Image 1 (cartoon, rainbow, N blue to C red):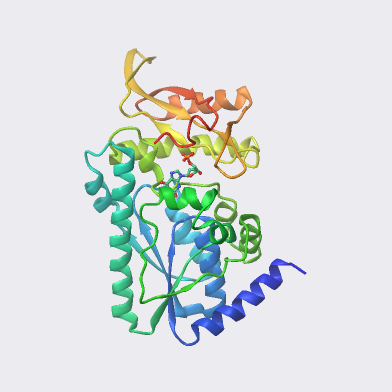
Image 2: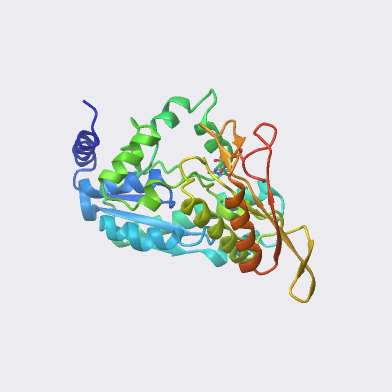
Length: 323
Ligand code: XMP
C-alpha cells in the first residue's frame, strides 16, 4: 500500500543503485519539488550530493535564509550558495518588458548555474555524473502536449535547468503528485515553510514589479509581500488561497495624504486567487477585516506606498501574475 515511508524507502534504494559511488548535483529553487528531491537524494547518498542555490535577489523576504539555514539544518546537505544578485540586477537594468525580463532571468540563471557546476566538477572531479531534478508525475505525463501546469512551467520558464548531456538525470519524484511530494517532504522533516509553500514563479519578484526592477523597489515589495503573507497566515487563510501575488505598480504614481501633506507614492496590488491547477482561477473573497489589516499595515509600514488595491479579476481573462 502507498505510504510515504514506502515511497522513501523505495526511492532511496533506486537512487543508491543508480548513482553508485559517483556524485550528484541538485539545484535548489526554494520551492517544494527541488527541496524534496534533494532531501531524498541526500538521504540515499549523503555527502555524494552537492546542492546549488542561485540567489538571484528576486526572492521574497526570508526565503533565501530558509534554504541556507533551515533546509541545511533539516537535511545536513552540502550546499553551495551563489550570490548573484548584482549580476541579475545589472542584466535587468532598464528592462520593463515582461517577456524580456523572463528571458534575461532564465539566461542568467543558466549561466550562473553552469558556472557553479563547473566549479563543483573542478573541486570534486569527473565522479560528478548526475543531476537531480524535481520532476513530478504531471510534468511527465503532460510534457509534449495537452494542457496543465507542466505546460505553464515550460511556457514560462524560458530558462529552466540547463540540458546537459554529460549528466544523467535523477528524478525521484517522477511517480508523485504534488500533495504526495508535500507528504514525503514532511516525513523527511523539512520545514513547513518549504513543504507547504504556495506556487511562486521562477523569475520571482522580477515579474511582480510593473516597471523597471531596482534593488530599492525589490526591498519595498519584499516588505509589502511579507506583511500580506503574515496577515493571511495569521487569519488561517493559507489553505483557502492558491497563491497571492503582491504586485508593485512602480510605473504608476498615486496621490496620497500622509502625515503633513500630499505624497506621491505607488500602489500595491493584492491578487489572492483560488485555483486547482493555475490554468483557471477565481479571485478569493477574502474577509474585509483581513484586507483592511493588510492595507493599513502596508501603507503605514512600507515607505513610498500610499495605496493598496484588490484585484477582482478571474482567470481568464486576467492571468494570475500581472506580467
Ligand atoms: P499566470 O500568470 O500565467 O500564472 O496565470 C500561472 C501560474 O504560473 C506561475 N507563473 C510562472 N511560473 N515562471 C514560473 O515558474 C514564470 O515565468 C511564471 N509566470 C507565471 C504563476 O505564479 C501561476 O502559479
